[in-house]
Image 1 (cartoon, one colour):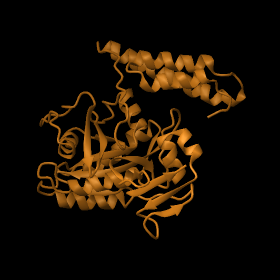
Image 2: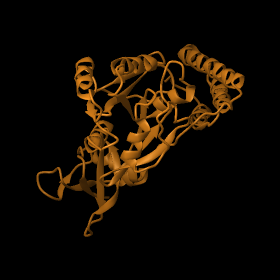
Image 3: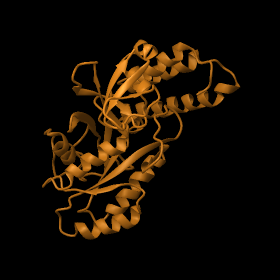
Image 4: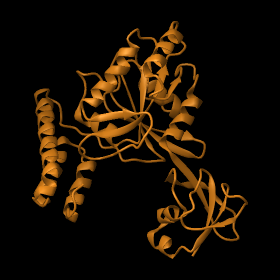
Length: 329
């Protein structure tokens, strides 16, 4: 991101992220362009914004020709992470989302039952993770807001149908559809949430309908094709097979930790833990509570990952999942 962007630019960027219509997105992008300093350092950013405006205008025209509203779905992140479920028609995305979260979104044998994003919360131990089931991804049925939801997410759950003889083609097509829209799916590495340009997004695979005859043969072929690029969990949404393993993998791939806090002389608070990125420090945990609190922090005592319980640690001590921290100011 170029330097010297004014506060108005970031206000407009926030407006863009939260806009719920295509028209709203276009207005926010035009504001970003208007307030941006015009110099060599912003040339690429200006070009990216103009290209995004052009794509949105084409999307809006297509929506109007189809006599549909120029709707745009913005979903605010809630819980410990946001996971988007992507797959071909009848792959079982909605069934998996329902099974993981206990919801009852409509499921049918005909394709494209899901017309708008369906949001649910998956409970994992003592936290909740947000799931977004989007309409099926095919080259003929990709709309702008689907791509934006994927770009904004923390993790992509690719759902593949082991009942289909074309499951391998579906896997390759999903990667191709997203790659053509500058989304590179990776199994490992640094995820990105940039507003413009290519991004890397972490992805895992749920190979669904394991209960169907011939599923294991197709699963073996899928393993060979994926070749360990992405973690693969075989599941049956119908009978519940593999769903606990899938929950564990989702939590693992989000790369987050839970940190509990306590006051001196009092028991720890074991509800509503702090959710931090893996590798976070005591200081970053304090900043999550309040900036002023972090500035006054002198040291902390930690229970869990330390050599002995209640060990005194410095600000830059790296915390682990389920550590208990007692801050001292």
